Length: 255
Image 1 (cartoon, helix red, strand yellow):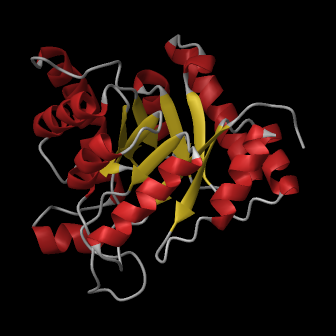
Image 2 (spheres, one colour):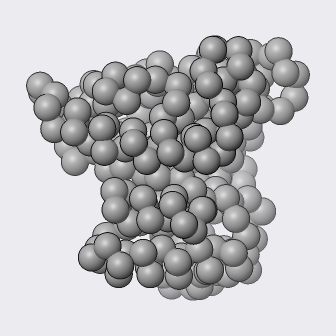
């Protein structure tokens, strides 16, 4: 096992469960000592019964802000097309105040067509959603600066994406954290592209924390990811919210 220090977070899937089961899940993760707790931002289940129970991201974050002590909570990730960007900035700042400066504002361009169709948002092409994202992020940052009282702390921005021409450039320009869903080998390449963008825009790449959504973390796989440059492992926790793997990885972190 590598001696490198790393963080362990968990995305709790807010679907196919009751609100009490969800609350029990984030409390158990919190008690285990996770570094971060996340919820995705969708309106319908992503798997299983398409019409099963599903809960809204920012309402959950407001509750978890008061109900947990984990160093960070956040959206993994919130779609900029689902809310007016200025409103999103205001919501996030309020949740950060509730959390005592623990919120990470995780942002993404969106991909789940059903959310858009059912809620009356324009889905368009991927390039349209990326263009909207490119416009929304600076707007969110400007609104945060104007808010009274604003966030309770620095409220880092996490950007999720792997697109080498636009999304990784936006990470270099705006984010304090980066998230992606790729293999460890792909991560090495994407990370190199991110470093290149940082150099081009005059940013120190060490200012950006590398996170990824990962699973099947044997000691060997965990080492492979650490060698690839991953700093913050985000595990998935789905109903019935069995925390055995999470507890095992946290022991590896603390070893």
